[in-house]
Picture 1 (cartoon, rainbow, N blue to C red):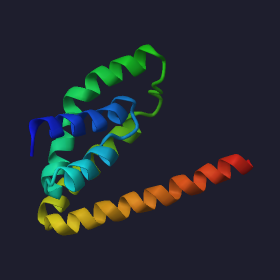
Picture 2: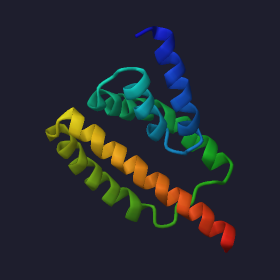
Picture 3: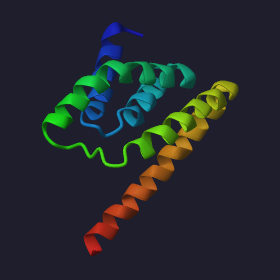
Picture 4: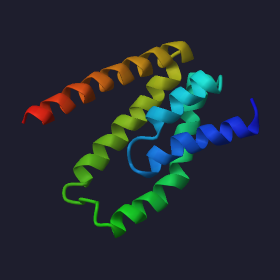
Length: 123
């Protein structure tokens, strides 16, 4: 693939990531469907790109008073442990299976978001 295609895909994934909206939900499908990259490589690239993006995004959100730090250790510790376990689980799965699981996750997330948007309108 062309450098410019990957540059555009990076920009399209980086914008929601910088806003704290989960850039991986955009980046991974873009890399696999448009960029022709395997699922494991796409997820690895997403995790690697998160490192340099998270520091300035965190700083900007903190400056704008958008961070709640109360109880943060109760979020960080289990997330770290489950994330580490998930890494070993993902490494053991074939890329095709991992892609199907990620797709199922995105479909479930879509339905949940859709449902919540209608519930918010009624409430």
